[in-house]
Amino acid sequence: MDRPVEDSGDFAAIPDEFQRLWTPHRMVYIQGGEQPHIDECPFCRAPSLTDEEGLIVARGEHAYVLLNLFPYNSGHLLVCPYRHVATYDLATAEEVAEIASLTQTAMRVLTEISRCDGFNIGMNQGRVAGAGVAGHLHQHIVPRWMSDSNFFPIIARTKALPQLLGDVRAGIQAAWPKEHASEQ
Image (cartoon, rainbow, N blue to C red):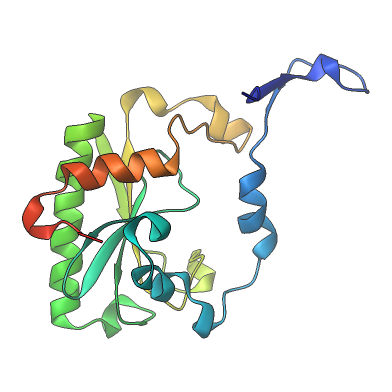
């Protein structure tokens, strides 16, 4: 097993007091920079994959829930309409209702399985507002814990995630109410 943290004293240079947490999987996100082409939209593609491949935890009639591939915290979920629509005001009443309902269920499930103390919930609409995929509406549900507010993300702009995405997805999907559970 690789060590996730390396002692800076092991490297050529002037040693310092900082530890390094290597997260090379984030380079795909960091270097991407540009919005995906509409034909390559990850939120349009995900429903065509198996739940495991698409990181999907639940499927509804108009929207679905998946794990964020680049999470802020373990259990960071996204609720997306199936339809490729950019902003909330363009969503149908049925899509809005199901996004709201799936968000409530996600909060209940995350509270049950992770014992989180609160949530950040929101939508970044448009590239200028920080949307990573501006062309496809998606709502973030980020579980938060009283003990997760520390200097690491603020000073080092790094987040330590204690669970693998596949394990988080399996746990959330297993706890999802059966009437709204995905069965792929």
